[in-house]
Image (cartoon, rainbow, N blue to C red; front, side, top):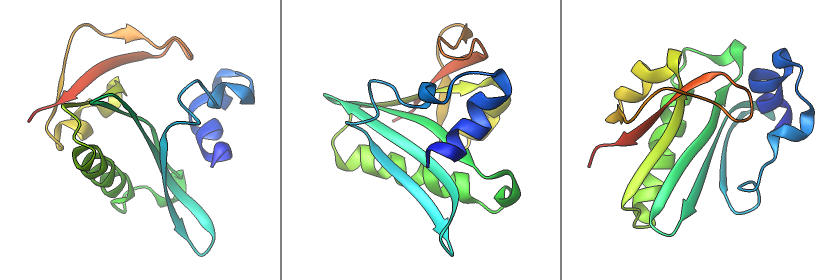
Length: 128
């Protein structure tokens, strides 16, 4: 699980492997997609009071285009709703904004640089 996230988010930036784990790691729900013992996708849901954050959604490059990311997002949203979240948000890389719009997320505020990677992100909140 850590390898897939590290390889796709941090390795090309020459960041240390430890960056994958943060203060939300222990308290979050981790959703994985596995086929024949091979990890194909991952997503994380962190709920703080009634606010849910989806983060670190990733699909193995060889498995992209099969609807795995869509299934992960749908299931994480469902889990947030089941836990009575008033708000569901995520911080999207700019090239993923249109993908998240399909799930009724809308951009909120200004584009910002990720504190971990400095890559530009956009906060997006799910419409009710």
